[in-house]
Image (tube, rainbow over the protein chains, first blue to last red):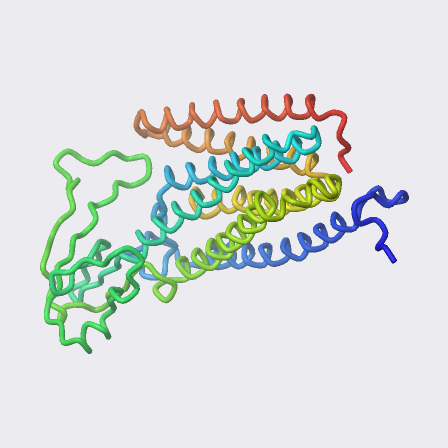
Length: 284
Length: 68
C-alpha cells in the first residue's frame, strides 16, 4: 500500500507530509534556541555593572570580531539565496543550475564553519591574567617559549596546570588598552602589544577565553557551537541531495523538488537563528 | 509555509538587521567615532536597500509559486 501525500499535497491542508514534519521539527528547534537565548539574556542582565576584565564577573564587551562576524552573516545570507535559487531551478526543470547553486550553498556553509573555527581558535589562545598586585590584562601567553597551535587544546593553561608542570615564569603579550566607546586613543597612548615576563608566583588567575572562565564564554560557545552543528548537519543533507541523493530526480522529480524545499526550510531556519544571534552576541 | 514564504521572511529579517547595523555604526560615528564607522554605516545601509530590492524582485519572479 502506498503512503498517501508523500509528495502530492493533501487537498484539505494543501501540504505534503514532509512539510508538516519539518515545521513540527522546526517548532521544537525554536524552543531549544529560545531557551538558550533566554539564558543569554538572563545571564547578561544579572551580571555585575562595570567593564570586564576590570570587574571580574562583569559582562565583556567588544571581545568578538565584528567585521568577521558580519562577513559570516553575509556568507549565510548568500547561502540562503542560493538554496532557494536551487529549489526554483528544479521547479523550472533546470537540473544543471540546481547543482551549481547547491555547490555555492555548500561552499558558503563550509566557509562559515571555517571562519567560525578561526574565531574559536582566537578565543582558545587568548587569556585573562590577574596579578596579585591588582593588575589585570588580557593577551596571549608563551610557556617554555611555545605558542599554542591551531585548535591545540593541549596548550591551554591555567594556574593549576602551570603549578603542576612547575613552570616558574611565562611570557605574556598584553592587548593594547582599549579606548572607551566613542573615544579615540589619546596621543601617545599604548597602541602596541606590550610584552612582559610574569612570575607564576605573582599570578592570581590565569585562564583562556573558554567556557570555564566566564559565563559569557560558556553561553557564547554553547549557542554558537550548537548553531555550528546545525550548519554542519544541514550542509551534509544538502551535500547528499546535490550528489548521491540526486538520482531521485530522474525517478520522481516532484518528490525530489519537495525534498529540496524541506531541506531549504531547515537551512533558512538555521540562517535565521544566526540573524538573531549575531546582533545579540556581537553588537549589543 | 513554503520555502518561498520563509525566504521572504528571512530576507525581511536580514534587511532589518542591516538597517539596525547601519543605525548602530552611524550612531558610533556621531558620538566621536572614526571614518570607518561612517563607511560601515553607509555599507550596511546599502546592504539593506539591496536586500529590499532583491526581495521585491524575488516575489515578482516567483509569483506563480504558492506561499503555503
